[in-house]
Image (tube, rainbow, N blue to C red; front, side, top):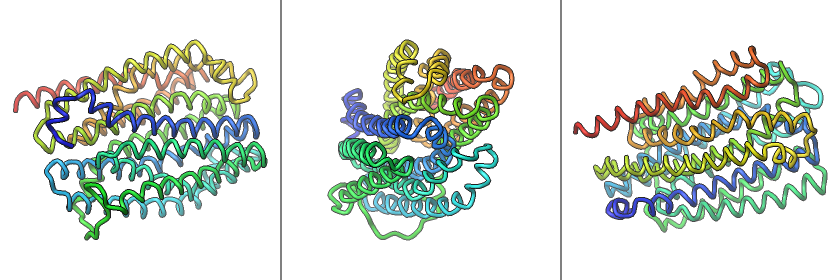
Length: 441
């Protein structure tokens, strides 16, 4: 990517890098919603609730993938901006090996912790059965998902975001077909949904690997010696993304604990259904962020920090507009949306009530996500980690336990919107400080 092209065509370059990423993310969301549709309609609300109880496991794997992947691609992009292609390939290879080893060790550890997790969440009987059936298979799926995610990030750095989009389309179509076959026709229940995910991830990883094995781009597999300095910088650069996903894991665990305590499985099912919509907007935000990350790292490698700031500002405006559209739609049609998942009237009512509060989240979440990923891309891991910690752990956990104790299910719905609003205030202050620092140079 030529820095001159970025400066002369900022909006065009943003969409060139972001749109394929966003489409890939939305397709991933479609896969999640498709799984939820077939699970809710063919297995039942308890199956949806059981899958949601284990979402913290997914978020941990995503945290590993984003931490290692974003951290590695930031270094790689900077090296490509400085035209050091051989070193960039070594970083690519080390990043994949590191992620693979961490994920294998994680799967072993989580397998040993299944029973304690279910005991803490007070999940037994049918819920426990669904949980075990689904997540025994997903422990093989999630490491593949992490590798596929990281390969996609490096494809974007290599200037080939279109491949990620094509993999997303293939995965989405295949997932729908296999869900229909395994869950709908063969009545394999949550096991069928998990097997579908495993097959889709295997195919997606092999398709992306094919590009790098051809070594047709700027980066590819290369023999390397493990570099502690690269590993340390990778973890530091990606620490905020890891904190963000770990925050999601912890907050989801807290939400499930609170919901099981005050409402029961119906509350978990309602939160799952509403969560699909929030997840969709989050994926759009992350898609824009993944489009921004290589551009910012290349700009910083080329000493064009002001251009990087302009790219961030444009993305914030675009995401706010999309957030308004999400807020209006789900505020008006929340109950009809909930009906898609075959839930009862009580669950649909809870979802509709939840959207009345959650629409505020759509207006502020994108700003916080983009600013966090921007700080990561320009090497300010501390600011990025602060934003992620506030919106995912410090404020969200405190409000979740406090508000639910005061107002029950209404308190659960209020926690995230208030968290995002307060985090936005801090995020704006950090951006102002960052601007002053650049101007003083």
